[in-house]
Image (cartoon, rainbow, N blue to C red; front, side, top):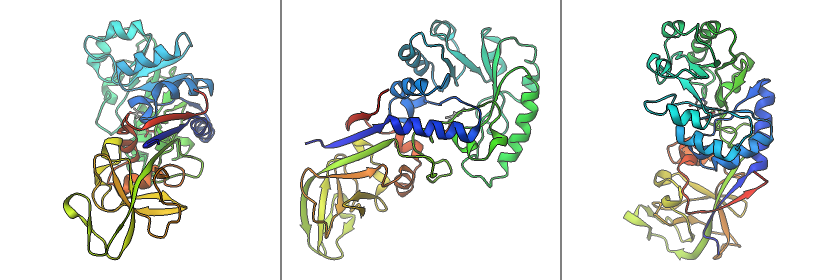
Length: 346
Ligand SMILES: *Cc1c(COP(=O)(O)O)cnc(C)c1O
């Protein structure tokens, strides 16, 4: 019996990529940091190359090296968002990675092709507009980029502020392609698209606007098998801390997945799974290896049957919201214990 299973649908990834590229109407350069949002950065990278992606964004040098290793001699541009951090120049060059310059210090320490990151209001990484002015004469600027702080909230006034600032920034580097939008930015409209968009979460079936979108389908499905079905009489409690009390006699299935498989501990008390065509509430605290769910009235509840924790019937945002977190964190915290299987070729 498979205990917990993570199914990754690379055909769905390809469809999401096509949908996002259509919406943006420009180049779409996947952001596949953190092992491709937990689903496999190398599998995702290879498949997206086949779907036409020619530029990629990763966060770390090590992620860039791994992706370069997987893509071999394919002519992909791999941007490293951390930039040329101290002591990494030789490794960036050896793997033919293109760093993103985030500060004047980084600019001074790197003389090859690079992207310029101008901060337009997020105050995380990036040069100020005034600092960027000092770099306008620099050769080999392959991209001018910025990042939106509130793209997941279309009504947020910060979006328009950052758009206006980015127009000033890109004017400093008229020969370089420009990139502002991550997934959320793509859904803000084509004003935000410029020459290249950088989708991450929506490639992998999330959001963007803190809820699913009709053109984005699930890529990752987490399921767990029933280990045991039991009757819990009214008044008895379930699990650690006795945190849930049965309000009436319940039929309870114990599933073989817990927080060690990536089901957040905070899924109690609002979490649910999908079983026999409906949502079934989680009961009591999430254990390391198990969850209890209410299957009262379900005819097919027996050991070995699988329940969906998130996937096509239970979007990852909903599962994340119930746990007080985001689809980003849920996906990037998936553990390696669940058995992995891929649908579609990398
Ligand atoms: C993570 C990241 C992205 C992708 O963002 P999503 O919200 O996942 O689409 C794009 N650009 C930068 C700079 C990032 O850090």
